[in-house]
Length: 330
Image 1 (cartoon, rainbow, N blue to C red):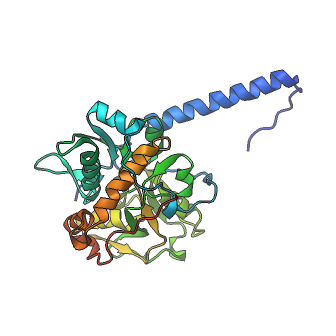
Image 2 (image 1 turned 135 degrees about the horizontal axis):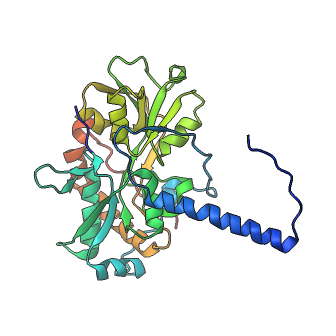
Image 3 (image 1 turned 60 degrees about the vertical axis):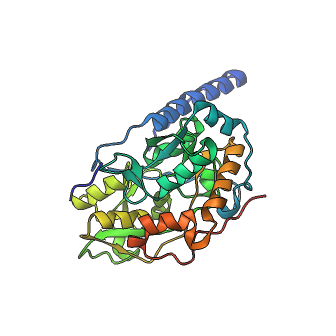
């Protein structure tokens, strides 16, 4: 199956107060600017181009509850909503390599999947029944920078709401719950997230929540980062890694594409998906929450359930409990 797409110490003479302060500030600016530019403009590596890295310790936001981090729904045309209407189309960041969630239809060459259905519902609510959407595919590491630079209006990309991310961007209320699992080849000696992972190469997407989970686990696994979970799939098929750590939802799509793989559990955590937006676009966040309120309503006939049954039920099974209940910060 072929998948698609010790620092050296030096003595220095003390500097004058003002000059020292000026130099420190200058060094800070010069050090920070290139890093931000590289993060925002980095392109996806070719499939299988795995790179081992050591993840930096995350900077946590003030105490928060990811389930109650979003404002209440409202349909008010503030600056962000007006900007979309004046432009005439919604710009949405998605992952076009996530089978069942967002991928290109081979016949119509149009994106389709569970996340795509939600994007189109948001677009119709703001722009009307003939709404136009510009879809932009991006790897996980580019999501936050692109929102902050206003290159996209929304990101609907199986993106987890975390306290760290809430320090930089805004999220809608929760629209899906999942958790991390390991994906391994049939016959693998890895049977769970345990001591057998020591020294094993575990692939994950750079910028994903899986990086923090693996780093804090103490299992002794070697993290191998790639641009996306699809690159991890290629690396696993080629024997470059021993397992993939990703959300159950995404892993199910990979198994549907390659039945020689299997999931080993149980779930390691609970991940909450939300629609991500610029932190200053409060009117758009409230508008998306209003869309989600309608999207959840209707029981088995709700747009959420209709989309779930079409895309996810065949691999994830029935979902009798329906969509996650909404909770808000105010």
